[in-house]
Length: 270
Image (cartoon, rainbow, N blue to C red):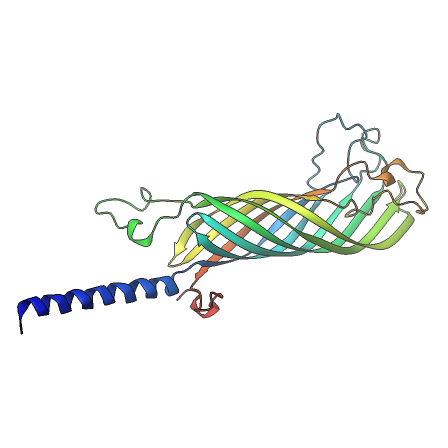
């Protein structure tokens, strides 16, 4: 066979091979991430708030802390840019002090307890980019510590918060003066940061911390609505905007996408 013809055939074959390889890499790329974990949440609202807004922000970790389970599905749509959907389930509550620092807070004995669900859509930006497999732990003579990396990101988002719980008012001896069940639905906006560390092939240990602001003021049932038996109490009128924070530890799995761009859960850890 003519060497020129043979050379052209080899060039065409190489081009086809590169095209197929590129296509395979596109469909097999692990663009999806699944985050699952547990964490804590801290509530900041009318309950446990200071009377004077000029006073320092209140921090009552043993009276305002709840717990949560979180799940996040992320998609890397371009370079450092991700889109994600999150689901958080958990318990939230807060209670006023009794006889301690009574001049600091509005009312003794106020408390609420509720289960909650939060759904959100978010945009994420990786400010510390993830290294490729071939560049991590592969350089001759370098240690794992020298190649250590912690891909990290910032996120902003919006979603909805739903809760159903109970509201209490007890006297200084712990006797119940008033109680009622309540539910709350509120839009929320959020922001925060997170990171992850590789612990296996396509498996990571991750963390995330974020701040949420509720656009409705009823998470603690202190929303200023009249008609309450205790509407003469100052705290009823919702002076403080409800806020809460999340801190969570996660296990992270990378997944390939299907040809229809949906996540292929069968490829977790494969």
